[in-house]
Length: 205
Image 1 (cartoon, helix red, strand yellow):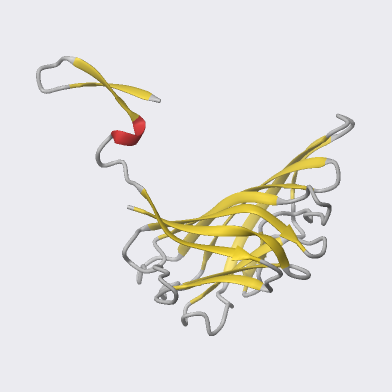
Image 2 (tube, one colour):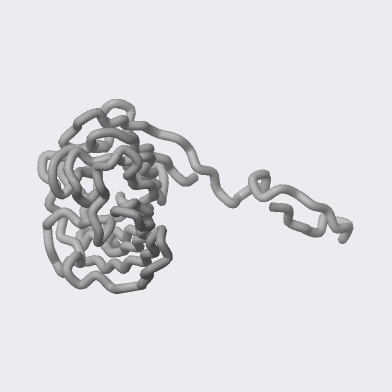
């Protein structure tokens, strides 16, 4: 993407989006790869993980997440360095789906999967990801200013996963209702293990 701007003489010049100073950079922090793991956890100060006031925004990316049993990827947060993943959360989510045969498609709010002041794990998709060889989940979760001592901690997620012969695009957002530092994040399946895939953590400068 090119952007046209004026220099100090009023002459127009073009630059690429990635080279514009001050827009921020995505900086790689840590990659965790699953192989039949019960969960993947990112704990500040552990195994080179940074999850503190170094960055105001953190991004987790999900790549080819494949479950051992048909289930949903879920997330929870910690304020005690991963001793407990039980932060109080309120969130909402909806799903858009369309099948391969073009026989159905819908957009629907998922009232059964949202949370209201709950410490439970928050699912990232209303539908389950299948165990077929070609079934998997990909997407991201953004966590904003987890070290704030003033504000609650907002998060936004979007994932796409295959459930049977359909594409499901899922949107989830909410907040951790705490002014304590969120210093650890854990991902796990609602049932079974994370059979394969990886989750990467980035900081936004």
